[in-house]
Image (cartoon, rainbow, N blue to C red):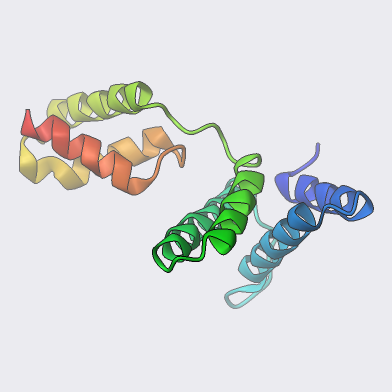
Length: 154
């Protein structure tokens, strides 16, 4: 069974051999972030695929934010590079939820919270916890929170 980390390593090797500088540098930085996460704390450990996926998602978010900052600063070439790196990382993440899929999962979370006795705007925390479990990293927290607020506003 190949792990996500092994897949990243194999793809890095292939990118180096193919002289694909963008992909190679992106994967190298991502593997470095994975390694840092593995040795963080009191003792080194091997990350699970889910944990590696979280690291990749965090790296992809950094690229999006950097691209926005470069755009605001008038550095289109740097912003384009960051977007390209984000696209490379997106290949290793699960397919993001569409707005309809997200709305359906949030509706389930709202119904589940209501069955537990949590309703109205004060149930936001409970609903977010339930929704985030269902979403499992396939949508950003801000999108989930916005959909929850929209549901609670109805």
